[in-house]
Image 1: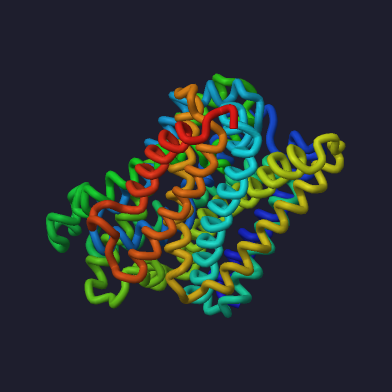
Image 2: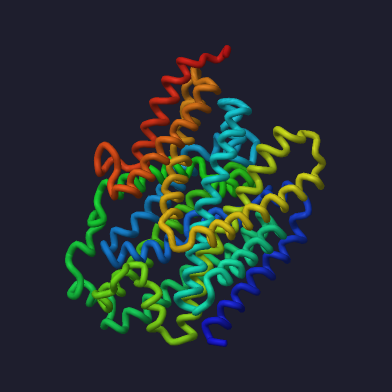
Amino acid sequence: MSTQMIIILFYLILTVTIGCYAKKKSGTSASFHGCGLGILMCVAAGTGEWLGGTSTTGISEYGFTYGISGAWYTIANGLGVMALAIFFAKLYRSLETVTVPGIIEKFIGVDARTVASVLLTFVMLAVGTAQIIAAGTLGVVVLGLDYNMAVIIMGLVFIVYTQAGGMIAVGYTNMIHLIAMYGGVILAIIFVSKNIGGLSTLSVILPDSYFSLTSIGMPRVSSWVIAAILGACTAQAGIQPLLAARDVNVAKKAGIITAFAVAPFGLLTALLGMVAKAKYPELPQATLALPTLLMDLNPIIGGIVLASILAAILSTVSPIILACGTMITKDIYQRRLKPAASDKEILLISRITTGVAGVCCIFLAIALYGTTMILDMVFFAYTIRGSLFVVLLYGIYWRRTTQKGAIYAMLLTGIVGFFWVFYKGQTGQFPLHPNFTETYAAVTTAAIATFVLSHIFNKNE
């Protein structure tokens, strides 16, 4: 067994052990979904939503292709979390619910809550599946494992510890993951940069465009920022820890600290991509940038860095499947099917739905491996999340918003978003205009449709 494999196995065992220990402290449904969390737990649990496989392998690919501007992905997410903390944390907390669909019900209606819960569960499953594919691919490229076996092993790990301890397990394990992520990436930069004579040589080897924050293109940057700010305010996995915070002040402070923990990470992983470009300018695919760099490291350092990448993936998947289980349990089972369910029953259903969400991610990851469908699915999922916030804003600030109008607007936005992503996948460009991305299409549709349809379907219908 290789040194890298031993380090990875040790890290997985450590994660499961911590998660199972947390089960002792999650004996009620409230503690499973999160309640009375302090700042550290909120930050740890919330950060995982924003720092996953995309912030490591994905941004390193952008760094290889475009340079430091690839970091806008996490910078945008940081801005989104900051907006959530400053402008909406207090309002959301006052509504006494642990789900985003529960917030939507307060302003629009119970049927809108059900529809939003289904749509947001799809969003979470799509993002979770993308993370599992990243973990499986990493197992194949770096560890030489069979893809299906890698996916099943990784999948069972996050299902076991999340299902056992719920939000407590997510918080405890994500503390370790966050340390591993930053520590591993910084270690990687130190060691791989030595191979090219230090980071200072990058300015000599790479074109000036690699050091511009706009080289990736302003349409993409603005699209990311808009999607991140809108999406952060309806991201169940990111919002749930704030809703479970001890009080409003803890929620706001935790949100602001989370933003500062998320934003800089992309700068580090983009640097790794730039180092790969400097050392291996002829790599046929940007996706090979990070795995190729890992091959250059000695086995111990490489194993630690690989564990940090795995930590990023685990830190995202865990809160995602917990978010799915929470929404299905609270918004559908308890709200619509069995309002009088006991706490013991709610806890059992929560564990079951969390586990089922994880299994769905595993099956989808196996089914979609080697295709571009998952990337399209994730883009489509993000358009849904951002557009739901537009509909929610109408419900909060426009008294004439109707439930039927909002529901039809949500569904119409989903159709438009799917068409935009599907059209791009088939033709290589967006409809109407190359810079009019799926984010712009979804947000515009949601804004217009909610206004028009709320006039068509009045509150008395």
